Image (cartoon, rainbow, N blue to C red; front, side):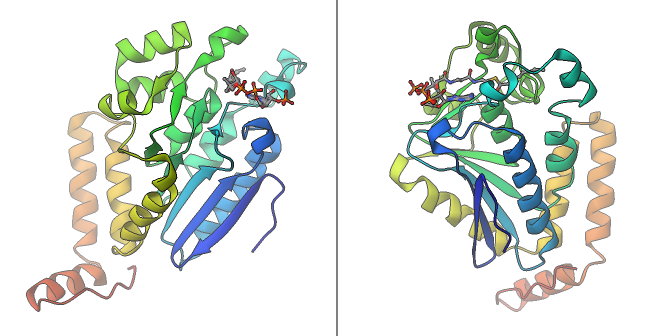
Length: 261
Ligand code: CO8
């Protein structure tokens, strides 16, 4: 497995565990982290033995406390614009990973850290997790999707209030507001996230990709178009070997054996 400078990657059976590993900077996201994550997620995506991934942060305090302010502080505006700074988080990370992945938020998820967590298929959080878009305090605003994904997740009132005040949202409120799927006691978070990932990894892999594609379509299209996408993907799945196996296994009262096609 490749070595990375700013993250660690482990395989636990069919689950890839990726850990942001700059705890001294609260796992702030710099250009190297982006390169490393793109590499690790591409390796996960390309490995047919790996069926779900979990992304978490090293240390006890943070998932990621944001884009690296020290890297951005002296960067000229023209460089942000000409490099289309932050574009690759969506184009090379979110869009290219068709297989499922979960963010396990173990502490601060602020600014780019909150935005990275929201790029996951869903978030599970420790009871110590704190989410926020505090960019306004730096004279800027979200730049990696926060204004869009947070608003879709929690609605306009809370998203607007959080962006305008920079306040942090605790784990319980985040679960109540629909930002996270589950909250677990801090010390159990990783174990629980890996358990959920193992459950997903045990499902027919092509159907997992298809389910993800359908749910994501709900954020990109009208209801009519989304319903068509859902039906077409369903219809494609009915031609798969795993559909034949899954239905036979149900009727024969046994576990399915998946081929991933
Ligand atoms: N970037 C770089 N370093 C950071 C960051 C960060 N985002 N967050 C924390 N660190 C560093 C600190 O500088 C400190 O380093 P050092 O020990 O060398 O001084 C170390 O991590 C520990 O941090 P603190 O001492 O501050 O820890 P505390 O427990 O006192 O506070 C907080 C924790 C509240 C999380 C605090 O660190 C904090 O407020 N961090 C910044 C949070 C933030 O503002 N995040 C948003 C960043 S901007 C962004 O993500 C998107 C920008 C979009 C810009 C668009 C431009 C086009």
